[in-house]
Amino acid sequence: MRTRHKPPTLVSMWMLDVFCCALGCMILLFVLTAIQSQYAAMQAKLRAASAAKTLDDLKSVQSQLASTRDDLDKTKKAFTAEVDDLTNKLAVTTADLTDKEKQLVRANADLTDTKKTLVSAVAASAILEDEMRKKEKKATDLAADLAKLRTAEQTLQKLLRQQDLVYEQLESAKKKSDERLTDLDAKYRALMKESADQAAALATAGKVEDDLSAARGTIKDLRKQLDDVNANIIDLQGDKKKLADKFDKLRIDSDSRFAGIAMTGKSVVFMIDISGSMKLIDEKTPDPNKWPGVIETVGRVMRSIPDLERFQVVVFSRSSQFLIGNGEWQTYRGEASVKAVTDGLKDTTPAGDTNLYSGFEQAFRLRERGMDTIYLFSDGLPTSGAGLTPEQDRTLVDAQRTDVLVKHLRGTLKGTWNRPENGRRVKINAVGFFYESPDVGAFLWALARENDGSFVGMSKP
Image (cartoon, rainbow, N blue to C red):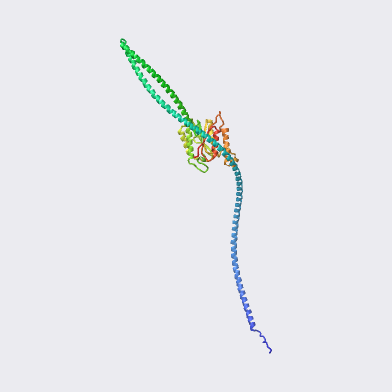
């Protein structure tokens, strides 16, 4: 059986569906287009607002960027300046390092010189110790001789007292004999007057004459004994005077020495170091008793000079000056002068460098006015003063500076200030006070020896 198809109609349901779908799509597209237009408009508004905000932000950022650029320029300039400064410091540090290396080389050389100086100082110390032992032995012998002389003096005084007693007894006997002789003479004259015509009176007169002769003989013997006693007393008095003179000489010799220094001089200058080290044991250790001990020692030395007539005091540290007056001689008046000097030193505070050159220069202004002796009180080597060239003053280390200053000072003393005049030089005695340096004693000892003086070192406190 043949199947027949139904002829198509103009609009079918399927086509209607398709048409509806197409219409729906068109509507949808229209709606989407409207929505897209609205969205685009909204997006445009948002972009405009965002662009405006972005423009404002851009202007703000540009302003911050300009400020940042200014800060960057300032920072760059500061950094450049700092780099330049660091570069300069690096150059200076490099130069300092080079100088330090040079100083280290010099310090090694100085250490070698110091070792040599220390060996010399040890040798000088041994010599000084030997001299001190000899002087101590001599002082002991003097003390023993003094004790013997005192014993002999006591013995002589005892003998003199005995002789005085005998003399008094003989004087008493002589006085009694004189009284008896006077009485006998009176009796004799009376008897002679009465016995002119009497034989008995003659006999009595003869007896009286015999008694008178015997009395005269006794008086003669007593006078001889008295003369012998007087001669003995005169001899004893002479011996006593000799012993007293010897005792006084020993006492003067003993009193006129200060720890081995002979106390001499009539016109004397006392040179006293008032640098900062005079109150120190070493560079970092103060000693509250050192400066008062120096003042006490100056007073003892002044009292011990038997022939001292006039004096002056020079104090020195960085510079020098006279302690009393303007450099005129001061008459020595015993304890009053000692008090004036010690009071002036008590009002002085040690400070500063040690300029020995200035101190000696000040003291030797008095040579033409009769200065004959200097007593130097110090504890250190020179650390400043004349003798250094500008180059040496700038480059030398402390030990080298001191060596140059010492040589210049000793040379000036020998060749200029203390040249012999009429065969004599000013005697320089040195009293050294303790300071932790082996070179101080050797320097002061050499200085005193080269100028006809003596040196004594005070012991460690």
